[in-house]
Image (tube, rainbow, N blue to C red; front, side, top):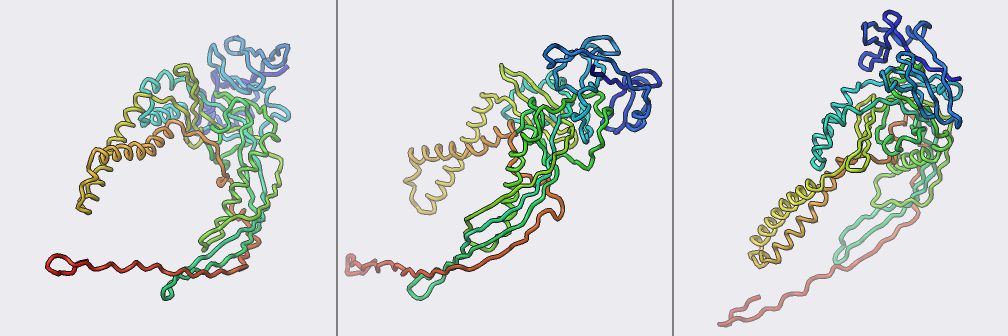
Length: 437
């Protein structure tokens, strides 16, 4: 039988929850406070209640000690709240054995912080439907400890580049180009510490990567006390599932680091590259996320905020009328600017033939094309979720080692191109015998 854990105040018997702002356990009824360590030492505040499991072992039925209500949870739920009395409940059986996290990064930001951040985020989006940012939606936001695997990776790198230096000079009637070709060799290693990969099938991988980075220096040894008042899941993806993705990010980062050491050339191409990865056993951590799923016109949109740093990401619906309005505004503005530029050029050339109907149509076409860039930027504002291609945040001091740096001249080419001189203009004779060009 698995057990539930409920943290009770020894003074009044109220439910004790973790306070993000203070970093302590606080009783909301009598305002008594405890440190996490103090609460762990007080066995009297831990109350357990046996649970029963369903036949397929995928769901569990738990009993709330405060109101006696039954809680039906899925197999990965580790912390939740009673749907009847909102009593925080930790399912200790889901956090035992191999399911015990190595560490937890506590919430630094409260639900009010998350709601304020979300509201500010939405208020600045020109393409967002106004009805979507109502307070009733914001109240549904909830704090979740998401399971992550943290990978330590060492990447050994060996790369050969073909690089060129081109110089040009004039000698008499010729343009002389000298091209030096180099074989550039780079080798070394890059060590990464704690590249995260979410270990929950429920969580969109791109959204979780968009929330990075988390500050691991604030991580604590795991205690169920940090989970009181929040939701939490245990991992349901094995650590092996994230290795290829983590190695890909390490490879991209290492490739850029070594490429940045090749300087002073007019052109560089990669000829040969070799990456070898050494992966340590990943650590298991719970990281804080404020999450909101909201339905709008038949589609579910998800938003998330890093519960430690406040970084906010999400995907929101687009108001088609607002899109057409801003498209028209940008097209009009850039069309006017294009026509004004055409007018200035016509004045400079003293030829106003371009200021015709065709010129107007060309200006409108240019305005429409130029408006694509700012409109894409507006669309990006309402959907800023994307995968991280690199892992620069997880490179420690002295973790980039360049052991081979060799630039070797292998060839030199010289080309001479004759300068084509314009043919002299013939003189013509005007009326009265006056020569003219």
